[in-house]
Image (cartoon, rainbow, N blue to C red; front, side):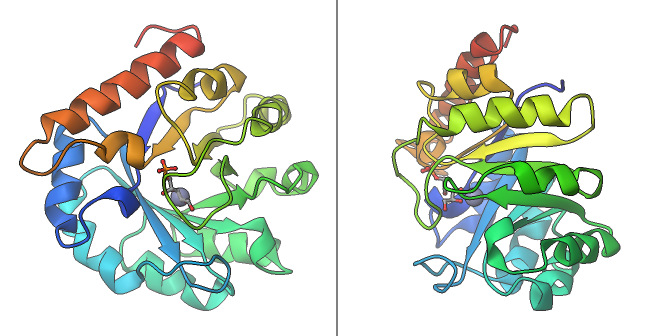
Length: 230
Ligand code: DX5
Ligand code: ZN
């Protein structure tokens, strides 16, 4: 399995300062930048769209990981790919044709991610394994940052890890990740940890070392949980 990656969600950053926030978290050790796109329909909150992704792209040197919490998805895939998304993740629950959606994402040249809400089982993933680069296990109900981690998802992560075997498919977990919850998720087999509040809490672009401290705390807790050195 690959090294643990930390993907801060800019949902918890300063919305008046996205470019500087992206540069700051990357300078402080973020592996990917996670961008939460919400439509006020699939989830009860509205954030940003492809134009914002395009605007921050020059400030992201690593991987722009775009999590679409929108329905429908298909009409917007080209726009997010054109905005420079490296990974485009769509929800299994967002429409009746997830297979078509994943095909359309890969056709743009972006990597394809499949997100599962906490109430969704993993059986459909078995039919999609060869067309995805990432499974995103939601450990909160999507829509807002700062919610509590849902423990029942640990068993889902472990079952997905068994299903994936040695295929090159990341297991990303998203929601409520802290230095306290990360070890259990990493032990179960998650290798990409999205964290919003736990990364941005207490820091700012003027005090970015706090972001670094927060990222290191999550990374080392996760590495210990997974039985590896940080
Ligand atoms: C939730 C989003 C998450 C969220 C994580 O709908 O997909 O990425 O921002 O935030 P925290 O880490 O605060 O739970
Ligand atoms: Zn997310």
